[in-house]
Image 1 (spheres, rainbow, N blue to C red):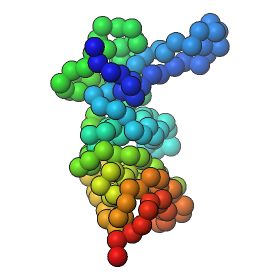
Image 2 (tube, rainbow, N blue to C red; image 1 turned 180 degrees about the horizontal axis):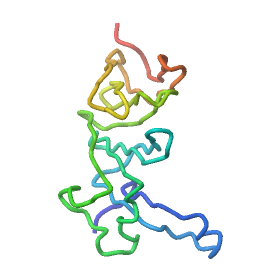
Image 3 (cartoon, helix red, strand yellow; image 1 turned 90 degrees about the horizontal axis):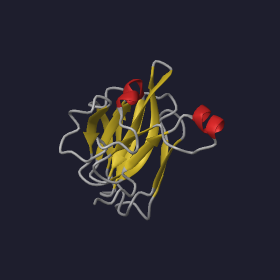
Length: 163
């Protein structure tokens, strides 16, 4: 038996909950590792998916157009496998070398900011995450939060910066 703490992403249909008064998930995604961050993302002003960050540093994308292909929460297919390849709704986008602690979009939605346990903040383009705009390596202690201010400004919370 595996420990599923923070590894399951449940999807609910609110109209079903309101009609039946039963709070049951419609479908469930099982991640391989603990999920540390979950952020909605879109392309061309439509809500299209979710970004997940996990304890291995992977940033993945759940395509909500295909979420009906996810197994029901009590289904036998809801088992851990070695590959995500057979899951048509999930794709790994990029990763950090250590645990990714969080994700934020800048106000324009054109850049994604992520941070990890190596005290590194990474800024990538969106949706082309392969364009790394910047890696901020000046923190001496753990970055606990990052907040997007303006399109070209972010702030972070940590103990101190490198001298």
